[in-house]
Length: 126
Image 1 (tube, rainbow, N blue to C red):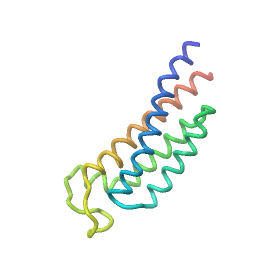
Image 2: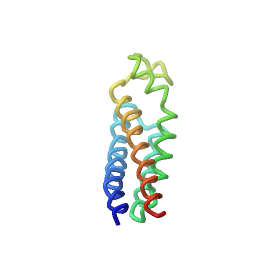
Image 3: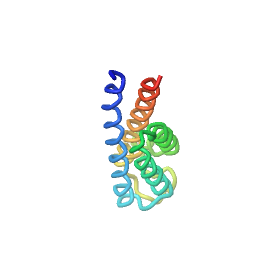
Image 4: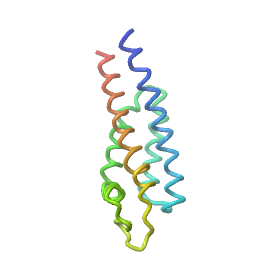
C-alpha cells in the first residue's frame, strides 16, 4: 500500500503536465500559426488523457514529450542562444520566450514526470 501512495502524487503531476502541455498548443497557434507538431502532439496528449483514467498514460506521455522535445531542438537552441530568426523559415518572426517555455521547458518537465510516473507504477506492480 505504501508504494501505491507513492505513485499518486506522480499521477497528479502527470495529469497537471498533460493539461499544461495542452494549454501550450493555443499559445503556439496564436504566436506561430498552426504547425504539424502542434496538431499531432495535442492529439497524442488527448489520447493519453483518455488512457490516464485507466492508469496507462505515463509511458505514452513520456515518449511523446521526448519526441516532441527532440523535434524542436533547433527552436530551443535558437531561444537559448538568442537567435533572432526562426530556424525553419527565416522570414517568420522569432519567439524565443514562447519557444523556451512551450518547446523546451514544458516538454522536458512532461518527459521527466511521465518517465518517473511510469517507473513508480511499474515498481508498485512488482
